[in-house]
Amino acid sequence: MKKFCLFLFSACSLTASAQNNALKTTIAQKADALQSKIIAWRRNFHQHPELGNREVRTAGIIAKYLDSLDIEVRTGVATTGVVGILKGGKPGPVVALRADMDGLPVIERVELPFASKVKTTYNGNKVGAMHACGHDSHMAILMAVADILSSIKKDLHGTVKFIFQPAEEGAPYGEKGGAEEMVKQGVLENPKVDAIFGLHIWANLEAGKIEYRPGGAMAGVNDMLITIKGKSSHGAYPWQSADPIVASAQIITALQTIVSRNIKVTENPAVVTVGAIKGGNRFNIIPETVEMQGTLRYFTNADEKLITERVKQLATNIAEAYNTTADVKIPYSNHYPVTFNNVALTQQMLPTLQAVVGEKNVILTPPVTGAEDFSFFQEKVPGLFIFLGGMPKGADPAKAPSHHTPDFYIDESGFTLGVKALCNLTLDYMSLNK
Image (tube, rainbow, N blue to C red; front, side, top):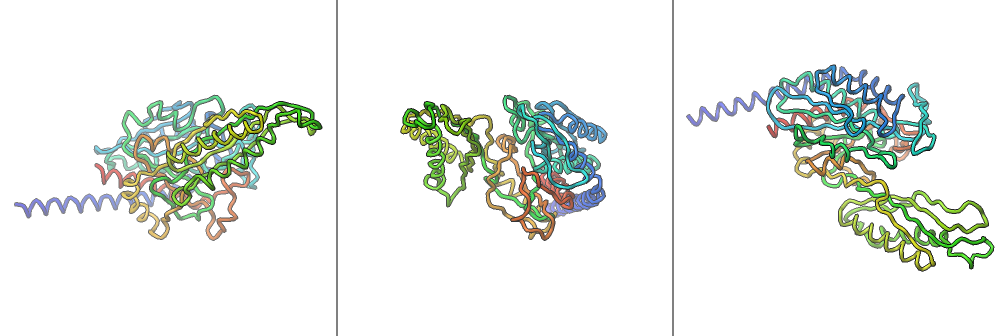
């Protein structure tokens, strides 16, 4: 009897494995067949970018398509977000897949037939708009994933939640938005999500490759605003002033010692950057006030605390030494936690990525000092965030135009790999955790 039960169990396992392999073949075929459609979606989004919390046209296209697939659709989540819920034919876990939707206030310089010519406003200023970080490709990829998974829903062991998120780059000042707001509004509940996966197209990683990192993959970030107040005077009589410009210069120099002298750089990288300084309006007037804005990047909670304390300590004490005062706000308007890939989940799903694209094309990456608000989802449920190659094959990564710049460019040949990766991660997670 025991032998018969063992034989029956083995036969069932082989049947389930064969069925899973058949589904993966179907996924690969469907992804390849959808390539031209994915590219068309991406180009449409690219030509009509919308900034954070203003993705009205974008959300409408996504919601309409999800509805056409008989996926339950929720709109207006965290202002303009769209959530689709696909219930599989069999019981199992809930897997969330996320794509961001917003463009950036950047004027496109790339000569493409579908280049953005959009002009809009951001924080009261007239600006251009451009998908300068690849969110257009993320949406197109996830729409294709929704198409494929909906076509095999009777064979899915669980539920898939498609999250199309607004304002990943941060909501305009004074507004709420992004992943943090979606979490607050319950996007990970009803049904409760068990794991979440996401990807980011990467402009200096060759198309056809995937990068990953367990643990801290992308930095946590705080922005900062330091206001130095002194005493104004004529530029010819500086002894009558308490000069906030000189104090600011000393503070900027001193802040660089935080990384070089306080952070244990052999364990975790960190960044302290002053990106804007504003003070004065004439060559011969010492102003009363100077403002500095910057960004702080880190990979552990301890380093976040250390950097924040040192910025405040240095700014306050140096300002006092120059008879000025420093008001330090950290964060000022923007905070993202560390994008932390759950270690056990990453180990569990690594064979899936390797099976999709080949072991040599799945690369362990160093920590990335850019930030991602996908991290807010990962604070609540286990998550895995991967990088998808978007650089033309054979190109020099050092010369690839950077994200967030007017020359940002993506090779569209890698999109179907992203589709296959997200579909297979979903399928395998469900099979392993049903």
